[in-house]
Image (cartoon, rainbow over all chains, first blue to last red; front, side, top):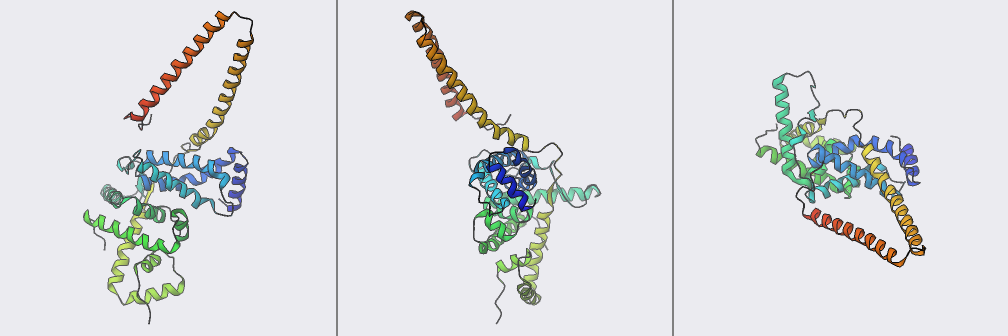
Length: 188
Length: 141
């Protein structure tokens, strides 16, 4: 969505017209869902977190600084919501319900059964690894790899200096590598 | 003398966050270090695996907008309901007090009203207390 259109929609929402919030919700629910599943580990809790984050975002829109981009601000609220839910034990990182909804992008529909089984096992191993490394490491990997954010955007979402993003990413990747190797995965 | 590549440089190289000059410097040093090349290959493979994790496309009609919209409209509904109930209750109480009914009738009607309010309040309080320790409170219907 073009930033000017986004700004117009936010201005209308700030004036109390909640119907103008719909395009924003529809534009951000895809990436938001990816981030929430990465954080929560299951689709149902991710949906709850996403829904709650959209409601909180709307209620905070009056305080939103229009000179800032909306995306990182929303992802920050979503990230805090996921963390709150994980900490309040309403949810825990749970991979069980992911299998039917997640898939590997490559070779979709054309791969052989054995290739699909290998992909499924690799996918499962990755989620186990993400489960093991804990919330702090997981969130930065989700923002970088599942969301595809730039360092400056990640810094905005996590509210950390841009200079520390690379070092936090290194520690998260190192932790994931150790976790995967401990489970028998081998990288080149 | 050129500085050594640290882990942050490696991550910024991997994620395409370097300037062309920085990138050139890293590549020069990497050519001389098989250890660095191997480390980069590991993180590149891991990055590719993570990026390949994705969802099946969200089917049409499964947007969270309808739930969000309902949640946004709900507080306004409560405000209207509360204002209406308070206004009608106050008006009814005023009519009742200023009516020409006998004192006995007024006392009896008041007793019924107070009884209903007390019963309702105790039931709400009990349900609230139970909800604090309900093991199924997080189970979504």
